[in-house]
Length: 363
Image 1 (cartoon, rainbow, N blue to C red):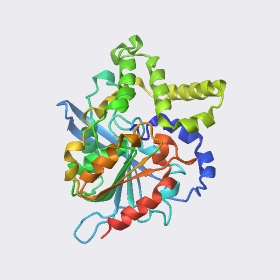
Image 2: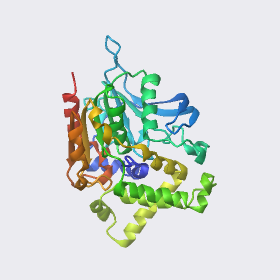
Image 3: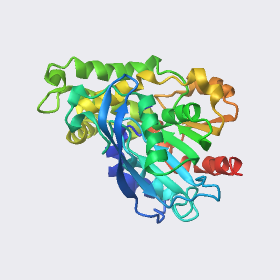
Image 4: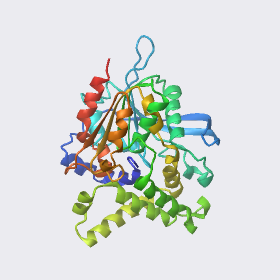
């Protein structure tokens, strides 16, 4: 549930052209995103801590529309994964499949909002200066800030669709419980509607421990990135894809070493240990299980069979979806087109299901 765990970000950008060729993506034209910042004054976190100003960065495509009663009917919120940002969706295999003319989320018809979560992207984050003194944010805080952005910053009082990948998928489950009348449809991708536990908690715990117990971390006041950020990158690389693809990419010992060393080297240039630490710790308050019956919107959850973070053999999704009043779940089979956890960003794998969800949740 890193979702588009910025762990995949570097690799995805590098191979965007290759993926476009592999999947026959046309790179359909869509409007250039408009970027902006919404400042939330005196934002109070669930921890009781407060920031005088919380900056939420966002990208939008399309134009917001309201009906005669002032209700917004074409807004679409799409939320990113752990250590990612809304920018991760502006690529051929996602935007090129969804946002173009006559595509499922045609930006000439929909108003698409791609926010950067608290602690991520260009939104306020620990590396901006507060370091380890930054408030201990959680997923509930992140969803609340997204809601304030839509309602107060962009004038959205109702959403046609709320969807997200990985961490963003987990946020989608929380949105359904915290704001059950706000949206027509929900589509969480690469996530499970249960408290993070088992192996999913273990790999996060490994990274958190590595950073906090690293002498070079210096209580968050390091002058250069601590070696533990390398450990974080290695674990994220390991969890983000499937074994078959990794074997194809690196069929020899030398290839495997070269592949992960290159990924780690690039990761060390762009990421920050405090930001990663906080992003992983933020999942501490994620537990949608007790409130699944509160979800009123039509919900379609989509996972992939080769997802190491949300493996289907756990049976959690199949069991818990029965508690969602209007819920349905799909697990995409392993194929030469799936990418493990990263399948959530390959829209060609699941966009037909999105079309059906929009049709079934329409007036």
